[in-house]
Length: 467
Ligand SMILES: *Cc1c(COP(=O)(O)O)cnc(C)c1O
Image (tube, rainbow, N blue to C red; front, side, top):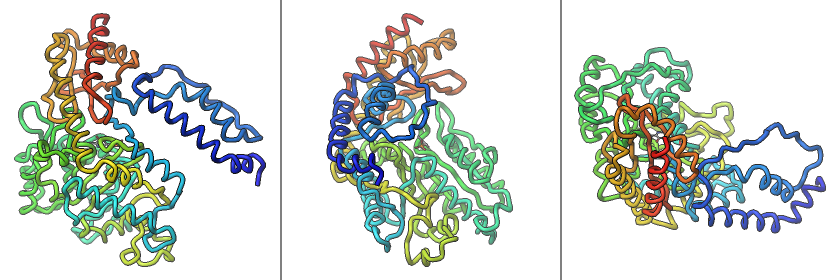
């Protein structure tokens, strides 16, 4: 063994001890760490011939890179839809690296990791009150989950006219309907060879809504004269957290033939709250659902899962079968994750979620979700009370979409937001909603409190008075 590696091997305990202490220091100080950082690095560093060893590498990391880390997992990072990491999720994440299992086949050496993944999906179905007719697996994010689900939908579409798109490529136009799809679904259409422009935009409901207009959807279905289609529906949209009407869509299932996909990356967690679960009523009727864990479940990146109805497993295997490896056996008999999703080798990605669910239970996640929604409402009220801001849409869940009050202030929105983010006290993202420049604050972090709202409103007033 190379002497540096040997030295590291002998020194494992000390190395991990130092790393642990650094983790504690960071996490205990998270709310004081800036949410943005303008400094940068010269990333042309040359590779050394002789290794430094872990501790010297850690020193260099601490000198050059650690100071640039932002508190994106902290309580006032409200940009995009960004979760944090609970203690239990970090335990699971660390142990995933330490045990370093390759999560593929159930009946292989180390098959327990695939069984842990089954168990975790089963726990998630209970959390979200979804039926066991869904099978699921872990991927890196909602984008890959949408890709997995829509990949199977593509295969289903071909099958309706006896075609096998997975084997022969796409040989006909695939009909896809959606009202306000997330950008990652559009990207998925591009990755799947369907084409990012090749979908029909269905109208949204009247009023200040992003949800699909089911009457317009049915008009479009009728124009297909019985041909199949894929519906990409939302739970929820990122700008205004609007939900499509899943009860109404379920009714359409009785009359028409379609693959129903729901992108529930963050909004699916409405299901854990008695107050908000009506928003996803009827979603169990879908063929496939996308849910992110690195958002509202507050586990570290990269964690999301797909749910696809068990009746579609054969189509799923046709789509993802790693067919060049016959020694892997009959894919239906010998279940192997590499035959049902994009990756082959995979870490034990379910473990942080497994730990989180056991550690905090249903009530823990109900509390996180309901607290975040209450905070979104309080932040919204504070904005309404302040004469400088106005909401662009009602607050339906955890996202607040607002802007500077008055059309004359539209050109100041970008400057205001950039100066606000530069304070490092809070981070939000720009958006455009109904042709107006706006700002979006999304509440998904388990650590956020009322105190944070007070801090942010104070910063916002100060920045506004200077732009
Ligand atoms: C965040 C998000 C995605 C993309 O998720 P990644 O985890 O970044 O891949 C897709 N759909 C919705 C509704 C989202 O909020």
